[in-house]
Image (cartoon, rainbow, N blue to C red; front, side, top):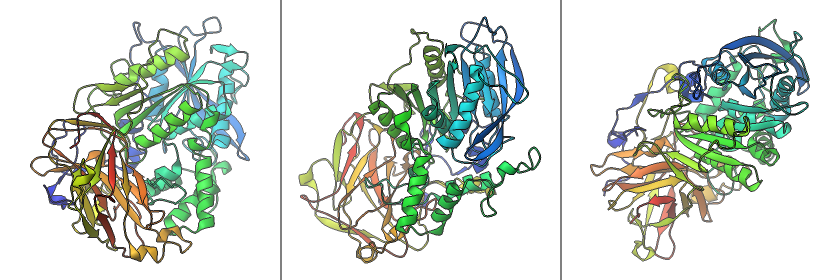
Length: 612
């Protein structure tokens, strides 16, 4: 058995394709990861133009347009480009695709422009626009609020319907219509350009199909995650990602076109609506007083899909990245389940790449223009062919597909795999398959006043620093691992742990009225090779703010699609901190007691093989 919670010298980074031991990598700048850089596909909505299926690419005419809209109490311009395929006219109409940028981008960035051209060359009318507060579009940044950003996008649907003109008087009459005033239109985009689709579809049921890529379900979970079952308690502030977004938003120019007053907010928060400013301020304060926290959560959920999914009727193909510490697979899975429960047609793809990298050969890549030659690209084309072109023979694929880095191509499933195998946390640091084999014992770790664990640094690249391999410092974490596996074990989905801890220092302050006094811990899964090399699977962790340390609690770990090879061991670790998050207030020793009749458990969604 390898020592749990080894130091950095014995850890390794997972290579998404070969899963070999690698040296610490240099992180790309955060601006790149947020979709600002044009050559990196992390927030790519779709690849660049390529030949359409069975036909030469259509010639495309691009026209710059401007629309004046009044939303959220402000009147502002929306900057857009219209992509019209040759041969499309009133007598020969075509369906439309509406797209917009990732956070910090615009209609002119490589991703958004490539998306417009990609679908126009395949015979769709495309309209690409700069989201509110970005590029030359006015108004404040409002995080894809359906009442603001969604309503603005709905005005563009009016244009595609032919019922309104652009500011220069341009009208179109060549988009396929289901009814007068109701154009046949789908939406696609990544991250910030993914959530806007759901915001738009919630306020405008004329939208016929959605393809949101690597986006969020609930901003309270994405930016202040608590993986405990009780989500009324705030989580651990994801300070690096969140403040990176804030700085990019505040760096947007205010001089376009003529010192546009609609893009000015307050002096303390120039480019964001007040609700965003209040949220950022509270999260950075390090304090969670009850009333302010409840207001923050209400606001964040009101502008998140979780607050309005019951209003979405458009068929939705969700695409989420396995390598994504910003919006992990649990975000898409929660959206998927809610849409299904509401009767909305939905399917889901778990690709390899996300905001944290992980591009695998042959995956959807906007720089390669590989819609037809990538699995995800073909699925997107089929989705739009089926729901926009009404080609009923277009196969929209399985309910769930997931990229397998251990085997070329995608696995398929009729549903999200359920939790199927359970192991127990033994007092000797082992994960055992039989409760009777649990050894009686107690183990303790203690947090320091500085972070002692590392998973990923989104901000590292912005100042030219390498991102080191993940590590945990001895004495500040606990680990439990299985015996060497006799055969490969494939885990697909989100594991769940049930824990009970003792922390007298926390008990004294956890009811202070400030949730920041509650205990914070971080759960994660490692893959331990026979030589002791440890891999933090996809660099994913589960921050937890324990609702009540006197009671058992459950933890939902981030979803994965991962093979543990024969001879490897599964290790479950609980750590005191992580340097990408704001953690505990004060020193809070934690003890975990195990006994055959009373111990923690780890449940895994295993689709192949047996754990112990």
